[in-house]
Image (cartoon, one colour):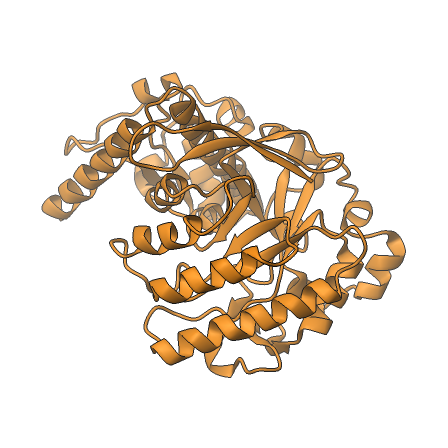
Length: 397
């Protein structure tokens, strides 16, 4: 794995662009999105449709090793040659993180000094470092995050201290059990305690890790307190190491992470949109999509649309006129509305293709804004328009 920072933003933020290189995977520019998967494949997009997504932006895939606690055994996967060979995705990069924010959620009340507890499709599981590393050795991802004790924002200071102590202990155990050539990202936790976040980050830096995974976000912290927590972590990390975060999925949350210097985002946002029948339509400022954004009867700019709604039954236009994704080039809102209402799986396939394409475009816009020295203006304009939109929706309700 190789990573280098290319551009720093101008102004108060520490946003940056970089280049990430993983084995046979194409060179990827950061900030970048890791696509959420179920057992290594996007939830609704089959392998033959993956080339329809933007390359190389879609080449990083997040996988939870805990998905393989059921079904095909880890020994069988190892004998095949790991995830890449089993799935035939030789030109994609896999990042293994235990938490996936959809099916494998940390359960801090059941976590103890032996291992981390997760709610999974197999029930509640206690995962020990040795067991976790056995899965990592079988899957052979390009890089992986060490096991962590993630806690919600409302726990006590003592529980935050325990969380950090356990995570550091498991970090040492995971590194000791790491397969030859493994690329480890050290886990950083600490809940909503700034001092514990700093302590954890400073201790992880002392270990032999190739990057940093920032956990514990998306568990109840407020939007206002998040920037200070992020800055406490990134301010304690070396500038030349890649930083991956879980739990920040909404566009506003991604912008907060980018402003703090995060490089990689593991997000389930696209999955939740798709499963709900929503399509992203917010403007991408590096494209002419902004001219496509239409006002509703109330004069508000839509950021996403619910294609289950009856208003789209006879709408023969694509989701976004200028979008180059397969869905918008070949299908209409009316057709997707029909598929959703008759419960055809093709609806989710077409929606996930569009939403993934659109959200990757959002990340491209962010990178261009940083390179051109206008990230702060980009962020402020984006957030202001989103707030205005929500205020007008509330006023019209």
